[in-house]
Image (cartoon, rainbow, N blue to C red):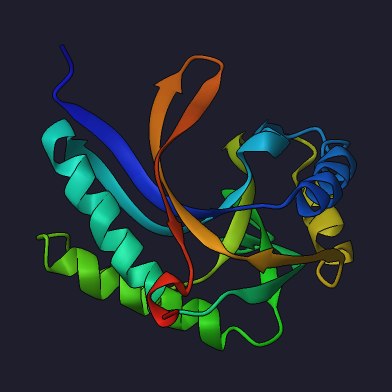
Length: 195
C-alpha cells in the first residue's frame, strides 16, 4: 500500500472563472503547438505545493492549513492577463494571472508558509506568483509564433472575480490522462476571528 500522497494547498477556481478560463483555452488551442491543457474542473491557484507527504502526516498538514486560513478574512480575487513561464516567446507553462489588490492573498500565502514550516516543509525560495495554470507546452511546433501572438493578444484579458472563502488541501494522483485531485481537507478563511 502507498505510504505517501502527492499534496498541495490551493484555492479552487469558481464556476464562473473556470468557464471564462475554458473559453480562453479554446482560443489558445487554435495554435498548432503540443500543449497539455488543464481540464477546467481542475483549475486552481496553488498556494503551496508540498510534494509527497506521508499519509500519517496529512491530518497535521490539514490542521496547520486550517490555522493559517483562520488568520485571514475572506476576500475577493480578480483574474486576468494571460502569460507564460519563462516568457511568451518560449512558453513552457501558460497561465492566467490575478489582478488588483493582492494584499490578502499574499497574507494567506505567508500564513500557510509559516504554519507548514513548523511541520518541516521548506519555504518557497521564489517569490509567490499567484496564477491558474492553463496548460503546459510539451513540444514546440510550427505554431509557436502563433501561440506567442495569442498570448500577447490576451495579456489584458479579464476572466472574472471570485470570493475566496476557503483553502483546500488536495491529493494529486498522476494518471496517463492527466492528474486527478481529491480534497484531503478544507480550511475556511477567517474561522478564528469569530467569537
